[in-house]
Image 1 (tube, rainbow, N blue to C red):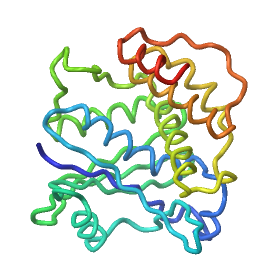
Image 2: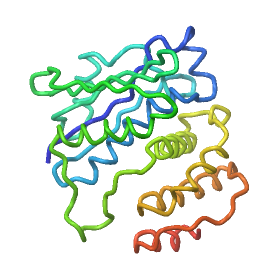
Image 3: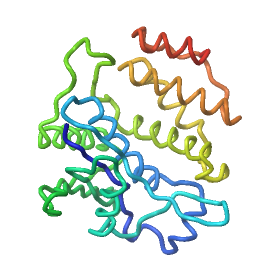
Image 4: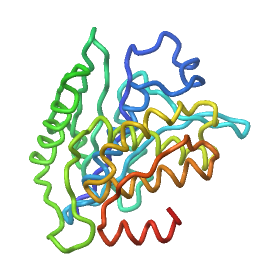
Length: 252
């Protein structure tokens, strides 16, 4: 299995005061900088050819830690440290940046081969609100094709299916990460944005694929445990055996 890491994206020029921004509730760019690596790490988890990790940063002292914002791309020393601290090492690391240019968001994603510490490929994609889902889906497909990604054979557990609405999936992943960080004392509760918009949007995609149903169950369970769950109506979920088991285990 090839070992691949997807690192938190940098946000060059996004904030006049980065330290102040790290103390504010997470905005869309900050959430995407963490959710996009999670999305790819999850995708590569579904392949027998790869073992994958997502690498995020945190900062702080005195018992108070919070997610970090990277104003510049990860450098060679950052990558060497990541490789050293990853069990079994790494073969490839994805690094990149997000920028706002007028009405467009621009993502530059680079693949670094660890053995020679050199860049092998760069992907650049830009989108507006209207084109985000289509452009992100194209990027996702291009990365899978370049890395010769393939899923586990049918019948080998939860099936992989590309998300029909990448923006909704990324928002859900970002919310799940935020609640996880609160649980781990790596994010103050007041820095988590309101969850109602995430639930309202993701409810439309919770049925399919089965992974979406599992994400919905996890969203509700974590939000309930933290006392953050907004008023929700019932949502139709997949009947995949893994989803049925998850609902029984979690009482949802």
